[in-house]
Each structure stands twice: as C-alpha cells, then as structure tokens.
Length: 263
Image (tube, rainbow, N blue to C red):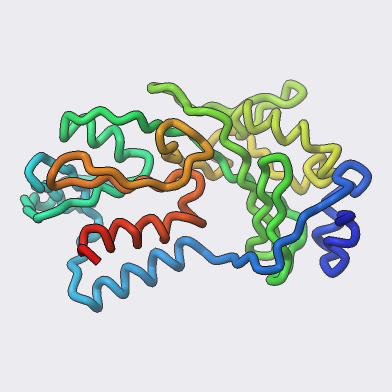
C-alpha cells in the first residue's frame, strides 16, 4: 500500500521517510518484537531453577570426547585478569554455542574445519524520536529498531570478513568517522529515501570505539542463511545463530534440544 497510508498511525515513523522515494510499503500487523537479552536471561533463570549449573566469569574451551576445560577468572588489585581456578568437566554431550568464535574454537580445539564464517557488524544510534508502539522499519537491507525513545540501526551484512580483518572507521567528506566504510556507503546511499540519515540525528562517532559493534557468525559463510546446528563429533554439536539469531534462533535451539532428548 502507499507508504503514507501504511504509516498513517505512526507520524513519527513517517517523518523518517520520503514517501516520494519509498512510495509503497508492506506492513505486517502480526509481527512481534522482543528483546533478545531479556529472552536469554529468562531462559537462563529457567534452566537454573531446573537444576542447571551456572559459572560466571569463566573462559571455556572444548576438547574431544566431551571434555571441557573451564577457567574461573578474577581481577587483581592491579586490574589484571588472571585464572583463579581451572576445572575439567565431562559430559555426554557438549553444545558449542559461542557465537562468531565457535567455528574457530572447533578448528583450534577439536581439529574440525567448518565452512562457516563471520563478519563485523556495527549498530549505530539514530537520535530520532520513537514510541513504545513505533514499528520496526526495514528498507534496502537496513533495519531501524525503535529502542529507548530513539532508534538502533542494523545495517545489512553483504559478505564475510576475511581472516585477520581488523575493523576501522571510514571517512565522510574527509572527516574521520567511527562507521566502517561499507556501512557508511550504504547509509549514504539511503539518505534520499531516509532523509533523517543526512541529519545530525545519525551518530557517526569519531573512531571505531564510538560505535557499538560485534562479530556476527555467518552460517555456511552466507549472510542470509538461517541459524543452524550440526554435529562436530559424537560428543559435540555446533549451534550457530548468525544475523537471524534474534528471530529464528529460539526455534533452532528448541529443535536441537528435542533432537538430543529424543522427543
């Protein structure tokens, strides 16, 4: 339907868009939004009530035959992070679910090479007003997620980043910014359709440390692949989320749990 009609009940959202460029929009009245962090916290609390053990401030590494070494970390008076104690744990089955680091851990600790990859994704801040009922907007691969009265941007991921890639900020009209060059070019290309991106409301930062970002797993090296799980050896299964972990991850995790439980 025409964009102006689709966002008629959300004038704040319509103000972000030029309906003359984005002339039509598709709406999903049944779409639900939730906070992945809250979901993870609730799942963890449920697991603990069911008898699961939780080790905080721990660095873990998998090994063959269902063995995991867990190093409890602590901080000294001089702010050094040291290993306080080391535990060797054994389990019938280990689920390796450490995000973008998991494929590297599988190769280094288990000697198993996978075809998965990773990419560095930034989530810049857009200081445009939003309300608790503002819809999540998606245009040309860019997602505008209403959060805390403003928006968090989730740019598209186009490709894997090669091994050894170190993220760096790009330049806009000669001025250094915190956004990596690929993301900056995508946002500049969208400024006609989303004029708010061309205003001071978009937080560019001055260096990489000014913009939140993290490594994201790419199942099978594909930015559009859904979350997946696969056996690495008879005792270890890899659970990989990726760009669609927030929406499809819980289903994939539930599927793996049912498979291991034989139900």
